[in-house]
Image (cartoon, rainbow, N blue to C red):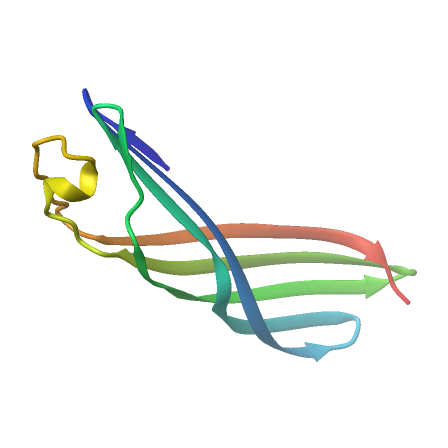
Length: 130
């Protein structure tokens, strides 16, 4: 995610890891559903204003996910079709001092110091049944 105007450039990189619990039923045709929680990840934000760089401190990174998968097993193969949605919330410390951004002489604040993302994925798979 990158945002820029005349003098301010913001770049955020977010990598997440989820731990899932799933329940499944069926034999030839299967249905699996589950949920997950964000167990770790990496979040980096950098702000550049008038060629001065500032990296805000991160307070919080959390989230959860929901998913389901439909499957068909037969003739030594299995096919899968699924859907997953992830909700991610990240928060960083608000800054309001020009000292924090390299003595540019300018103060700035964000409308919100919270980033909320929702992602969706369609999952397709084919494999051997064993």
